[in-house]
Length: 471
Image 1 (cartoon, rainbow, N blue to C red):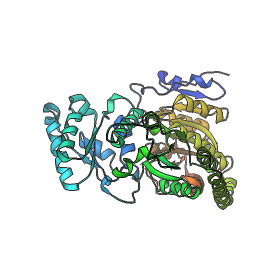
Image 2: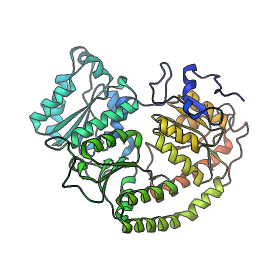
Image 3: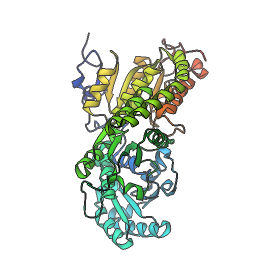
Image 4: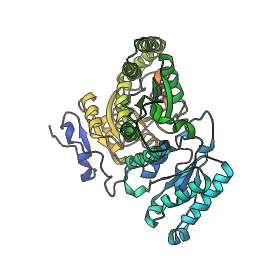
């Protein structure tokens, strides 16, 4: 058998970023690299990565220094829910024009900050740079420093010019901004006094559909207080308390691993990766958090919660498993840790994953994906639309899990789709999320519409993918 990935219709330089388990060694996959020039990948830009992380800070002014298109592209991104301020629902822009590009936009930016602070009385302003700003060289640092002194508030520049890297660089730019925000007077230092016992910062949850509230409830039931969420339903004053926590737990490691490492160095707060996607990972995460605090009563309460919640949802999960057993899924999401959890979650409902890829996965995450995948699974980093379409067809996938950019690819091929990122209105974390996920997979894959798909995507279903479960 050939050990190479078939290269028909593939960009040659992309072969090192694609492997098939069983044909190649896992360390042959190239990742965490710049996108190939001329290859329009599904990966987002630096600015978008930064905006994803920071936009859920509910009471901040989010000002995009650049053309209006950048602000409109990320307006109300991901629909994160708030229990308080709704200021973050606005997307403000300096709306740079041709004259601003020629003569500079610093004065326009300063006037915009003055106007917004006067109108909204916010204590925090994030100012995002864009590609144009990086080219013309506006000094965001100087403008923001002057505005902060003038208004007596925090005005933080986010160095997110789109061309300086990839989405991962945007995550880091956002984390640098958050580190500046939470720094106490006198500079960063480990807290000897004032540490909150049995408290955690919950990193990498953006409260898309109330997930942060669900996990807060679980942790409260076992005796753990959530100090602050980064950044779902967060606000200026809560974020300032972040150095007081005893532990950082990370749901989205791709966006928050850098922040967790820096907080351990600066404030002495240890961190652990957790996942509340699926029954297996939710139970394991609760046990790991309880074990960290080494509290027998907390561990007892964790086991009690796991037993109660699992018993409540297991019958419904099993019912969906009977309907979905044998179906095939493709995964393309932002981070590797989420992809790992999704493979486990699909197995809980009887579905095999035949293709898995990420935008920002790291080497150790791809090693884990390789280890837990079945032979023949296609694993790919920073994919482009042609690759996703090709491998979905070749692998006979019935379903694609991805984000808003992947939806048209699936529907064009006559493949069911689940949005795991932006547009959903129901939570997918915890035990309630496991049921919601199974229900959505069932209703999507088993929709009667697929029986009428004809010659879609080169005859995907006509070529042997016709067998659909009965409703």
